[in-house]
Image 1 (cartoon, one colour):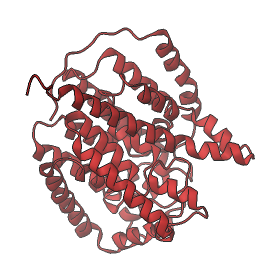
Image 2 (cartoon, one colour):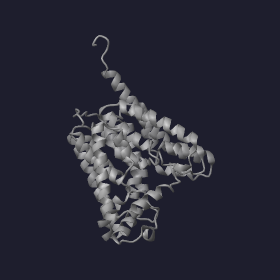
Image 3 (spheres, one colour):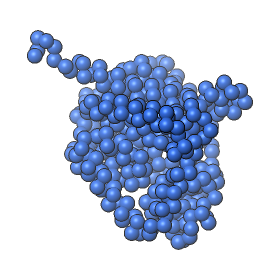
Image 4 (cartoon, helix red, strand yellow):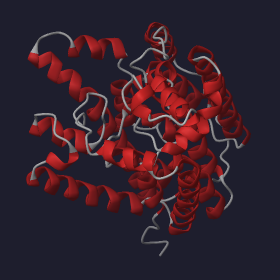
Length: 373
């Protein structure tokens, strides 16, 4: 699916090194958060999996925020529940580290990363709130990112679809990304993920799936500051913490118009740009496109982002230390709080726009001139 590229050895500039070092502080401070705290995502995953293993109702054991992941995740995580939650989190983190390392090794072996791109990757990985949330809250970003990377690097559409099906079974919003890729990929991804889910239903029964569907109707945090999606944008504008079903007709009309334009633009792109845009568009048109989903598409992004000023702006916006954003949100000043809620949606939009601009520039460069026609 990806052609080999000649590796460029470009020494990082002084400001790039400075940005890299500057990203270390928020990373170190943020990672002191206990991922097994009652309010963390990993705690919700662990408790839901424990309820499944003990054949108890999830509501009886889950004291954290409810897990929005499908019951297939509880199946996958149930072996970890034989360990105390602290030990389980350490094993979970080790698995994520191994997956990130293997993805990086595969990218390097395919000669896809220039030295400059590696510097950008490290800056974003250490300083972006997306990466910090994955490590500190035990989220699924690196797991989904690994299967997305393997799909992107696959030698056939069928194999790419099979890799994506794993991610869809764990994070169903990834299906939106798959639908923006060639038909040979999303067909296999859809069928295989449906098969995985059907096997999950046979193992868990229907009740956990019915509870999971009902839970999504209650989601009223579309306007959370770290929701990049355009559902979050219209929810902020409408106000009142609406659920998806409470959005106004005007909001839905705006959403549908934007989604059609984004999908049409994405389907025009080719190669790496198509994968990068599909990944970003899937996040932006999903009701909950959390900022910690961004690392799942970082592999194709890092091959296209160094050459664009818009891309650098997006990286700056998305690498704003989480402590700064939290300070804005908790400042007590309405203007500063409003600024904090818009930082990441603006960064996501700038990132998508920069990739689209890069794709259009490449398309113009490859278009034959009048003399060549």
